[in-house]
Structure formats: structure tokens, C-alpha cells
Length: 161
Image 1 (cartoon, one colour):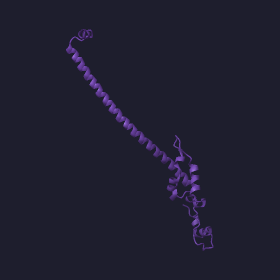
Image 2 (spheres, rainbow, N blue to C red):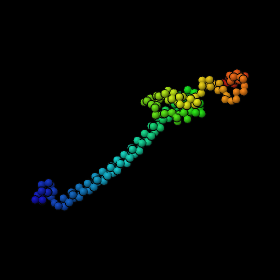
Image 3 (cartoon, one colour):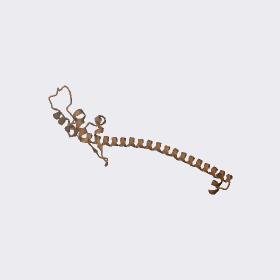
């Protein structure tokens, strides 16, 4: 029965059957090797994708933080934070309350500056100080002249930076 089965399928001898089976096994091994190579490559690319996604997330959050810090710095300087306190003010501020939109514009700055003014008003200069008039010195108060009179006499009030 086996011989007639093979003859009906176009196989005329057992040697021919052996050749067919050998070729089949070789092709099967080649396919298995190719599948293993593709699986290995897939795993490599999957790991690389995970790594790059993590780096992108990290860089995106760092970029967003830089945008928030820069916008807050500009607002703080405009509102009179002493330049030597700007870095401290930015660290003290709640940057998570600020939002960056798709146009890279930062919102919530006004509230952040207002909060800082309430929490640490000593970091902000007065309008007089921003116009170039230094604050009245803290001292013994032995002079009877006011701070403004002393400035007029010393001509410091006319200096502009």
C-alpha cells in the first residue's frame, strides 16, 4: 500500500522519497534559523525602542522643565525679584502647577509669581528700588536727614543703570 500511495503521488522510488524528505528537513531548518534571527532582531529592536522611549520621555520632561523655568525667570525678574534670588525662587516655586501648551507657551506663571510674593516677599524689590533708588539703610538712625535727602545730597538718585 505504501508503494502504491507514493506512486500515486509521483514518487517512484524510496531514494527519491529520501531526497524529498532530506530537502524538506533542510528547508525546515533554514526556516527555523530564519525565524530565530527575526525573533532575535525583534527583541533587539524592542529593547532599543524601550530605551529610546525612556530617553524621549526624560528629554521631554527636562525640556518642559526648562521652558517653565525660563518663563518663570523672566516673569520673576519683571516683577522685581532680586537677581541673586531668582534661582532660589525658581527652586521654591511649584513648577508642576505650570502648564506648557502645544505652542510651547507656559500658563500659570502669574499665580506662581503671586504665590512666591506671598511666601517670600523679601526676595522682591520695591518699585523704588527697581527705579534705581536704593532702600533706606538699616542703621542707628543718628542722622536727622531722611534717606531721600541723603540721596539728593550725594547725587546717587540721578544715577541710572
